[in-house]
Amino acid sequence: MDPVIITPDDVAEAVRRASNWKSPGLDGLHHYWLKGFMVCHAVLERQFQEALDQKSLPSLFTTGITHLVPKDRDSTDPSKYRPITCLPTIYKTLKSILSARIIRHLNSNQVMSRAPNRCRGGGRGTKEPLLIDAVIGKVVKRNRRNLFAAWIDYKKAFDSVPHTWLKRVLELNKVDYTVRDFLGQCKGQWSTILCYLGQRMTAAENYIRIRRGIFQGDCLMPIWFCLPLNPLSTLLEGSGRGFQLRRGGTKVTYLFYMDDLKLFASSRSHLMELLNITCDFSNSIRMELGTDKCAILHVERGRVANSEGIDLSMPISIRTLSEAETFRYLGVSQNIGVDEAGMKRSVCYVFYARLTKVLNNLLSGVNKTHAYKSCLFSCITLAYSGGLRLN
Figure 1 (tube, rainbow, N blue to C red):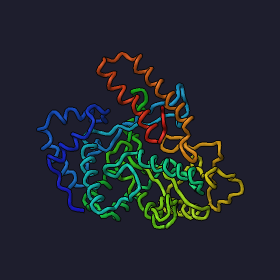
Figure 2: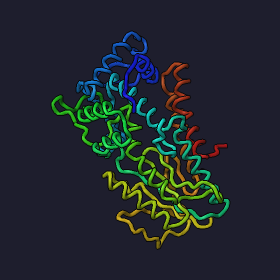
Figure 3: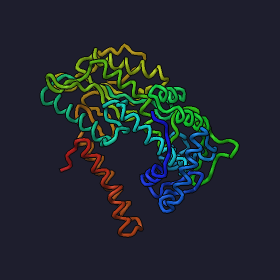
Figure 4: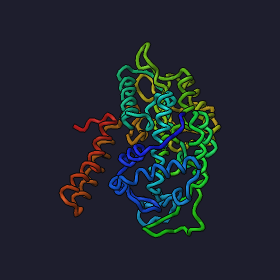
């Protein structure tokens, strides 16, 4: 990777891509002001370059505020709270610049796998894997084909990637050594403050250190999470296994979006090979599979077969789906294909619940229009991306 020389244009582009009023961290600064005061871009460019050359950053910028949002009312169970971490705006701007440079280096050398994931430029998010999965389900049903599939999910994926492996993948992919050293220094300073209902729960001397996993809210998080799992894509592609849509066509071995993995095979033994590759790789990088969120599907001649008697000679136990069961993959309930009846009910319930909230809110006409676009249309978009017909 070429050495990183930060310019005012890099700062302006990073600021332009950011949302105006996202909640800031300890600096209390919104991107709106950085966009308006363009004279600051040259100063930030100089300070960012100095921090990169000196391979250090003040601890203020590597400390986040983690807001605990309850999933249920009056819950006392810590697992029922959703943590949302807000990082300083200056830190996110610098990380956005470095992320763009690293992605450019990876794309120019074709490092990332061809599988749909969040880190590929020009991608369509979850729409690509969902559409590919819908096509495979229709081919299996229409042509009465055999299919063995497995849904794999990592337990606390973003929180469990070892920092040693995060450092190693940067070396393996030949990221600029100055950037590597700078990121390593920042990684050692990661810490956060717990905040509940606007009140800080952590004293200054007891900040929580992030010793494992990726810092939530970091602009570098998507690519730095995909890189450690990218070798798994290479291993799966090199296995030669998968499901062939038509004779002489390309085999679809897996669909990988962030930490959600789905494996495809034409026989039980081939699926076992893919599962063993996944387990061996995961054990090597010390990441654990969430077996309660994993499942296996066995289809014979276009119909879900009785899964009893299937021997999975693995150290972990993965449940198999029956014909009446569904599995939720990337927000869509599916078995061989999409569970259209269940998804219609789910989409309608969420749509009307959000519509009621927007209508009952004391917003102006313009803001209600923005709320319709951001809150309501996302339900319809998810339904269509999963191949669901709403008419």
